[in-house]
Each structure stands twice: as structure tokens, then as C-alpha cells.
Amino acid sequence: MKKIRHILNWTATVGSAVVVCLFLGIILIDIFSQGWSSVTWHFVVDFPRNGMTEGGIIPAVIGTVLLTLITTVFAVPFGIACAVYLNEYAPSNWVTGLIRASIRNLAGIPSIIYGLFGLALFVQTLNLGTSVLSAGLTLGLLSLPYIITTTEEALKTIPNSMREATLALGCTQFETIRDVVVPKALPGILTGVILTLSRAAGETAPILFTGAAFYINGLTMSVNQEFMALPYHLYMLSTQHTSIEQVRPLAYGTAVVLISLVFILNLVAFYVRYKNREKA
Image 1 (cartoon, rainbow, N blue to C red):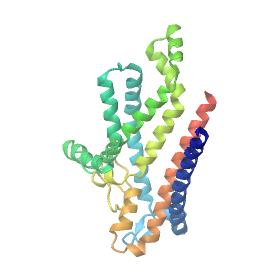
Image 2 (cartoon, rainbow, N blue to C red):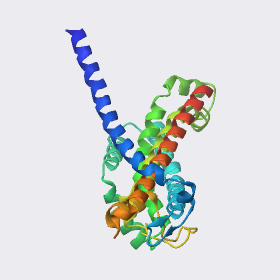
Image 3 (cartoon, one colour):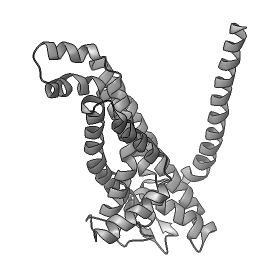
């Protein structure tokens, strides 16, 4: 009976994975088969022309990179610091449990809610206007719960015996965390951070109200400017353009570039995890 149950569980797990991979493969094949021919060097480095029916996507690429950098600067230090406090310093009581539950609930809030909150807080209350800074801070808020959760889980994998050993040698708690705990947990922390940022780079709803523009004649070089971004650019080409059929190849090409960027970030995450595990 136990063996049959094990076989059934294994079959259900493998079957679910196969079904998910099958649908993912169908989607990727459709996107790449229709969009790969549009992806050329000129498509990546040129500006849009003729009502965005021709040209390239360089403003959207630059805007996405700048947006991700702002999100990183805002979310990563705060997220890691919060996780370190919760796991290493915070007492084990109902208040800490409530904070953890709130963080996990924030991770489940739809991204469009973060967009509306960013509009109310950063654009209107703080008078930052519709800009790449407002959008980056909004994505930073969206990313914080994920970074905190993944970082805390990585810190929990470090056995308490290592902390006790360093404390027994006369190290302070801060030195133990800085020199032993965080370096040992670094592979898991970096993996969670990079995967979270790759997800944030593909978000459309949070930047919809906070700074993304349909078209900008030039590159976004200031944090106080509106910007073009790949996910919003793809959304506009696919649903809002006046000549949807004409720009459909460009939309597929944009999708290929966006998926490729996210895939590269995921590869970086796995590579960083692998190299840090080797050092450990």
C-alpha cells in the first residue's frame, strides 16, 4: 500500500510538471516562431518611427534597465536588512508572527493595487510626478515582500551551531551575522533577489499609473522623466495601437526581447548560486 501511494504521488508530480512544461513550451514556440524574425540589431538599438510601426525599441530597453536599477537600489538593502532583523534579532512572539504574516499577505496582493498605491503615495502625495523614480519605488514596494521572505528562508538554512560557535569564540552577534551567517546564506539570498528583480522587470500594472509612457522621442536619462518600458510597450502594441495587425510582428519581437532578458536574469541567478556554493 505504501509503495502504491509513493508511485501515485510520483506520477501526479511528474504529470503536473509535464503539463506545465508542455503549455509553457507551446507559448514559447508560438512567440519565438513569430517574433524571432523581427529581432535584429537595428530593432534593438533603433528608435521607433512612423507611429511606432517601424524602427526599434531602444527607449524601452533603456527605460527597463533604469527602472530595474532603481528598484534594486530601493528594495534590496531594505529587504535584506528587514529579513536579517526578523530572523536574527526579533523576539519570537506574536508581534513578530504578525509581521511575518503581513509580509506574506503583501506578497499575494495583485500588482495593480501596488500601482494605485504608488500613484497615491509617490506621484501625488510626495509630488514626484509620473516618472521612472515613482515607478521604480512602486516596483520596489512590490518586490520587498518577496526579497524579505526568500532572504529569511535562506538565513534559516544556516544551523544555529555555527552561530553558537562564533559567539563562543568571543564574536559579537553583529560580527557573527556579518562574517558567518550572511556569507553562508548568500547563494540563497542572491538567487531570491535576482529572481524577484526579473519578475519586477516584466511587470506592467505597477508602472501603468506611475510613469510609463506610450512614446518618448529620446532616451530617458533622468529619474524625473517619464519613460518607455518593454512590458508596457508590448501591452500597447498588442492591445491599444491603431494598427494592431501592422505592428504585430514588432509586438512579438518585443516579447522575444523581454523574455530573453528575464531568462538571462534567471541564468545569472542560477550561476551566482552555483559559484557561491562552490566557494562555500
